Image (cartoon, rainbow, N blue to C red):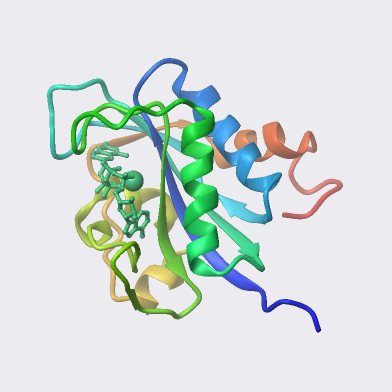
Length: 175
Ligand code: A4P
Ligand code: MG
């Protein structure tokens, strides 16, 4: 019997070193470890939220499908961060790569290690902006606003997809 397939939405962020390469490398790691890309937002430059004395972030959101169950998915996200030698020093502090799980199907999860929908997503433009660019209906379904003030699109989704698939959008592989 085949494994059930889940739709998952993730947020990726980086504010140290080559931020673009960290997002692309993190995404490549996820796609090599059980996730299949369905869609991605563009990459936005965003001012730090929480602890503000740190460099600006690059943020993006992705929609993937996977047969990984939630805790296995969380583990793969942690491994993607580790692959970029993320050091956990300060809460909300600078990071080479942060991968957060935003949504999994219609699930509501409140476990010690995992909260879904992500507990702070509802007030964060760096999450809601990219997510809404991909799928406004998804935000409406979860009663989330499309907040995109103060975030600046740096790299269009079509260019990100081109980098990931090597194909020009609309030709070849459909994601
Ligand atoms: N955890 C629980 N639920 C989840 C979930 N849905 N996804 C647990 C991922 N992890 C989840 O996370 C701490 C623990 O949360 C994990 O071990 C997991 O079991 P972490 O990644 O180790 O620590 P963190 O990143 O410092 O905390 P967190 O909660 O991810 O921070 P936030 O709230 O994501 O804030 N400003 C801008 N502009 N852009 C950013 O990307 N990011 C942060 C991090 C702050 N400011 C930012 C940005
Ligand atoms: Mg995190």
